[in-house]
Length: 138
Length: 138
DNA sequence: CTCTTTTATGCAAATCATTTGCATAATGTT
DNA sequence: AACATTATGCAAATGATTTGCATAAAAGAG
Image 1 (cartoon, rainbow over the protein chains, first blue to last red):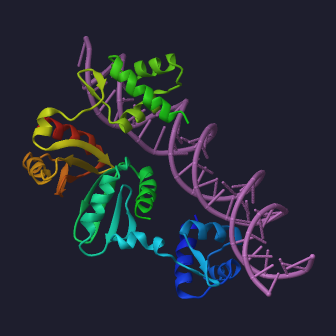
Image 2: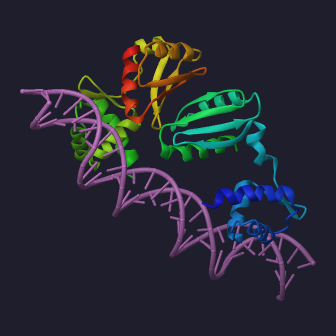
Image 3: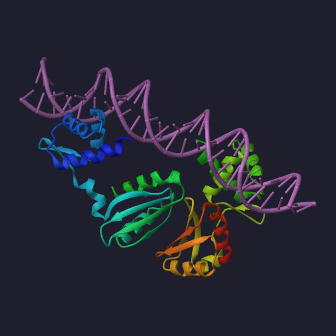
């Protein structure tokens, strides 16, 4: 699936350069080895909440919501574990928020200082749990 | 998708009647117009956390004895992990009790606030470890 | 222990959902 | 208006989940 990778690249490109059109963005993406079409770029921008302001695209605060609440990244670990990296000291807060969401495919969470282990019930649940967590913090 | 509907029916059937085998359950489902196979029923029962007790299936509720000592539920997580959900603050106590029991298929435990991760040595040990833990607290 | 019954699971096919690109419509700019 | 840019309906491609079959594993009976 290209989507996730493409959207990450879009975020970093837009933070780094001043980009004025979707075709320009498409060109940059292709130059960094990520295929793209204008259609997909258009849909990505909506999903990421990126808006055009003064003639160029910018990442709004909303897209940084997860980091603001401590969640930095989610990493798959084996078949039934997801590791959440957090800002130092915020792992418990992140874990509590995840627990409260009552996501059924999550078997349980264990928080350290800046890391949360999130056990999912089975492999097929791993991806959807990750999606739901991102939504929670989005 | 049949799955959701089938699982709902399974829950109500099991609460209403005394059902002893998966084939029996399959027959009841089909009589109420929901197609089913033993395979699917088997997988549904796991997903719903339904367990056979005294020769018939029941919707699980944490045994009183277990709850009194903090253990609320046991959940399989992937191949070699079991997650124990506990009353807030009692996870360490539960973990200590499990450790003391010296269950050989348990490789180790890690307790948080209300969650214990229980690593088992191999997949085939997962179910029997869960049984032994329930016995411990039952 | 062996035989029988019951339950679990690897695998491939079927089903269902998401993502994509194309064509083109809508919108904005000059 | 003419041109540039962005959005969207739709069908095809891709990916994920669910299912049934066949059979393995486990539990139970004798």
